Image (cartoon, helix red, strand yellow):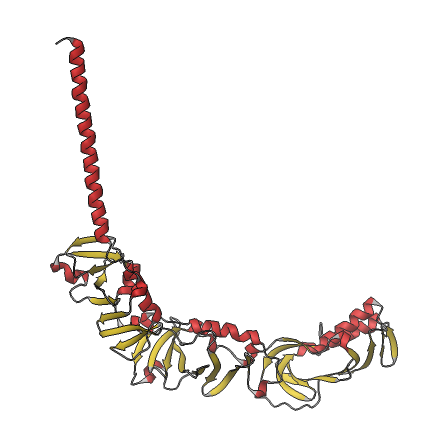
Length: 461
């Protein structure tokens, strides 16, 4: 064979070997891809529309429970009489409907005890035609996975612990964990008592959609916007499964609820009630309060920090800074306090006024500002506390400010000593229930201070 022909033959052989090698590699890759696809497909445990589920059955260590979707909500139809956690059942349907395992193992039943599958929890979901069933075991030693088996597959699957923790069945998981069953727009009344004495009682007027405190607080300026944050927090308070304690407790004293620190009576617009006995001292180390709900006969633990309703007083529902009288709306002011006896007249249109008969000009900016400061200090009320239980007498007032308004009406503001550097507030001779700082009477930025500043500005001192 001559050299060119030999070389050509060698090239043909080499090319054939190369094609064979490429084909072999491709075949192996295809086989690997096929196995990977099969493995991935095997790890897909369920694929169905979670919204199609109409019935769910849970076999738990403490019983078997059935929930059915009726009138747009889940109802417990067998196994117990407790309120059902709507979010939990919905989440189970959602998670199972798209459930995929991370890894799987040979179905070695000798290892079932280690997997927690010797006595598993069981979930069955039914959509009217198909039943989707899974057996949920325990958590892995690394806490990464929960072990699951399906009746029609001969493998043990490990699913992410985030999903597995929801699928781990128990009565506590099924129990409604919210403090109240109301939404933000359902409340009609919120009444809280401490050691049997009413702290506050908020009532909603359905026609005007406004809130109010009882009549004895009617002299105080109520803040409508103060109620919304309380409701928003209260409707969102919930506990964990570990916080669900006894149903039909035989001894409330175990939780310090035989003589509860607080009682909250909550009423919805439709008449639904929740009566809560609350002990914030139950577990102060971990920050948990014990709560007994009379209507469900259930004890649960809630984070004390979330129980805003027991931390409120009437003071929290009033407007703290109130303008009773404004400078431009008065024609006269009689101000007496200590040695001060001042009778002002004011004519803002003409730009003039008088003090004890001596005229001054309101066109003078310094005088005008000083007079405005006097009126502001006496006409604005900065409420520091509320005490409806007090019955102070209007005797020896520390300060009296009697205003005549441009419409001819009178407004009188008076303060008496309440102790602790506070003063009781009287408006038109009646105690309002409000207390203000005694700083308004004397000291820096007091009415007396501004009066002295006025005398200097008006050259009357």
